[in-house]
Image (tube, rainbow, N blue to C red; front, side):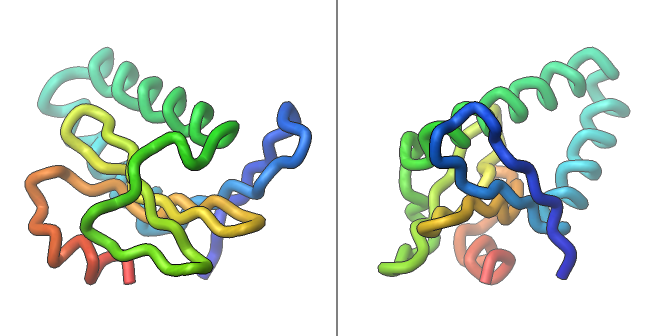
Length: 117
């Protein structure tokens, strides 16, 4: 599985930030739907809001709530960022933050577990 890796040069002890292909694919689909339905300006604003929340998350990965639909373990802490009507689900480990998926809030939580696992 290919991952896109971004390093954060501004923090003293940066964690690697990676995006799973599932997240990138779903984000493209959401932005395309948004562009067609609401227009380019709204799609750009939505993408800007996502980027901003992810940048905040890079500096403080534990600032967002634990994901109540996916059980965390000792090694993995699943968290989610709420952006408008979407959850951005990510996992925090000792050395890395991985963005797993972006999911609409209307999705059944049981299927959310299946998509992530």
